[in-house]
Length: 255
Ligand SMILES: Cc1cc2nc3c(=O)[nH]c(=O)nc-3n(C[C@H](O)[C@H](O)[C@H](O)COP(=O)(O)O)c2cc1C
Image 1: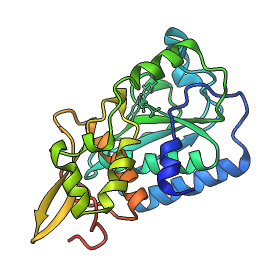
Image 2 (image 1 turned 180 degrees about the horizontal axis):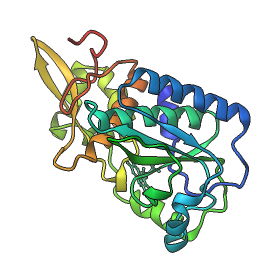
Image 3 (image 1 turned 135 degrees about the vertical axis):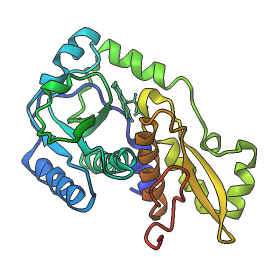
Image 4 (image 1 turned 90 degrees about the vertical axis):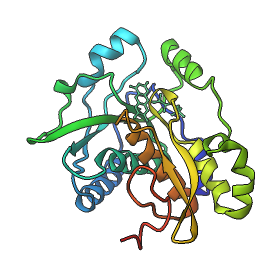
């Protein structure tokens, strides 16, 4: 399966079986988390298994999640640079690795009880969001079905992520990699399916560079920015530069 095919198959899963995560899957997730935490300043992702506690109050009142019992808590040191964006980016990497193993995932931004998340927090650290993990169940609850339908109502084509949209076709002609990149961005999950990320072209040192931005007056949009950047990089084999409005490639050589 190509990265683009894998990205296109991901959906938020809100209904899980009661099966525990298999040891080989836990091992794989833990290895990736260790790599992320080791290389990314201020990211302290933690995998917590067999713990439905943080969602219990919420899942009962809204009836959205079924058997949510494993999650990664996206713990970050809020003083680290670009930490919202990098948390989104590496959480999406984890999500895609999980999807590849047949594990269902759902980002959860607000509907959990922070004080009941069994993550270790030091001073200056906070939990930005959770990523639920588990084996998908067909038995999706009505509320989850309604929610999935509701949030997918506003379909957006890949070109609509380009700004200005009217120039998407000519930009793809000049920069062919943009075709897969825009499609990958269109598959990115975002809070409340708001899809706040826009892709645009900017000239830097005489070269046309593809960049990504969000309206950062809501800092949570930066999480969605990181997620979309991961999708773009994964599909096109590029490496982004961190920061809102920065290029989606050239990260390996950027000073
Ligand atoms: C940062 C973030 C927070 C989210 N929070 C929630 C949440 O609290 N509850 C929920 O059911 N879905 C949540 N979602 C999932 C989105 O609703 C979902 O990604 C979006 O509707 C697109 O659907 P898809 O993931 O199936 O493509 C969140 C997604 C992101 C990226």
